[in-house]
Image (cartoon, rainbow, N blue to C red; front, side):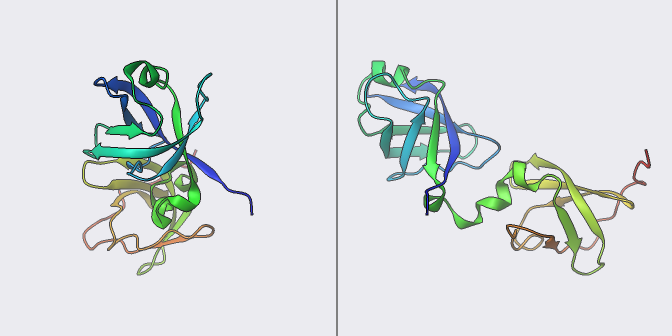
Length: 177
């Protein structure tokens, strides 16, 4: 089986003199860079290896991660990485990554386990504590928090079963145009 890779972060700037860089999550994903993770730099640098191991990682999960990479030990080497992306093997990433994958979520069908209402994910909003899915159907629009009590799993295909919390109601009528 051929390995699959996923873009997980972008290098936005250098930090200090020891070749560390600051990365931010890519494509609406949470921070996935962690110590020991093997990453590929794209586009690759003209000199040196494309492959690096994360030697250190300090993150606050919001504004980015301070990352050390094997083979990058000077400010000059780090500066060459600014604007690049980090790719990681999908098998090295968390199994529940699909719950954060906006590109695969928007347009997916969702069914409420208690009412049977079927809707579609129209938008994924990134909140400070958790993501929020904007659901739309003929009943209108509903914003649901993406937490374990509401979304227990996201299958690769088919409808996503959710548990709409008591008190949440559909707002307005869907636009028929």
